[in-house]
Image (spheres, one colour):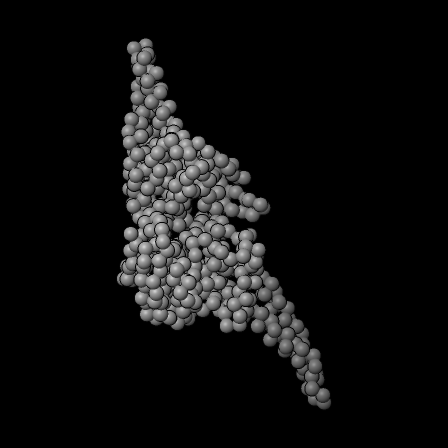
Length: 499
């Protein structure tokens, strides 16, 4: 009998899903076999979670076919709040437990039915079931998760429950592993452990994530769900190919749209000129040349009709390309002071000159967010918090109006579409709201930028653009982050490591 892990398989053909009347997935074709690790990338609202639900079987597609071989382990963005830590682990190990029970049952009848015993033994070996509890224990420790299996889940934070479930999933060795934002709530140690486990997983892995370092380390295939010329996802053979390919795709899209727009404008100008000549031809000057002007009229009419037809036949069929981020010109200011919060942050001194940079690092709970909040209290700064504190019932436009006439125009930043800028913040996706938070911080022209996990919920394209802008801005910049790729990109910046 072949290993269940070796026969694990996923396939989608022509999958289409619409939610609320809006197409979310269009003609998606995917294939993954044992050893494949597919990364789903794209801004919030582009269909990553929807695609994972289709793969898991919890959301039937409107059109298309889904085929699966092998059992599933799923980490979505909803978490159980009832039961204990042990109950949650047992839930993830249910197939392991079932395989061991089946082996035990067939052991008693091995003489009568040796084939049943062989099949049960193969099932146990495929999942490496004997070692599952040890693997879970190792993952609990590495992820910084609660290890007391009697502790009620209701007493744990969302992050703690997420780490417990992830440890159970990694220990269970499901043939097909579907993970939605698995790096949430993980520090550097937890991220390193997750990366190692995914690289060692012998089955199929499909993960949706904004963590560029994780995707660069583990992805064998990248599925880009961000907007494309034809509306269909783009597939690339790994992270490096994705980064190179999406740049070329973006350049081609912009060039096609620019060429079509310029041709449309030229035809409109030609029509306007022909109409002006026709009008001049029908109104000759008094006294002379009336006959000559009149004889030109039919030709001018034909020219106008020809230009009108050309303009009608030429449509700008290429949709506008995605927004491109532009950092406004900013000056720097000094940041000097001491922050101390009893029980949360030990006495920490910061001394930055105008235009200086600083990266704040440390494990979960070390006080990175507390430090940035304390720095924000020292003087005027543009402070991007991890969680938005803007009025949810107002739009970005309304909030922007309160910044005054000197504020940077929202449209010039390339972060929000006009539609999103005019909608109440509560109606925006998580990614669009994060863009709104960043746009409003920058629109105030801050001389000091305090950015707490700035890459959260932003697409890889925008993060690359933002990172490049932070390198060159004149503002003083303090960044607190766990993002390993951002830490690599800002490796030359001074570090403040909190214990």
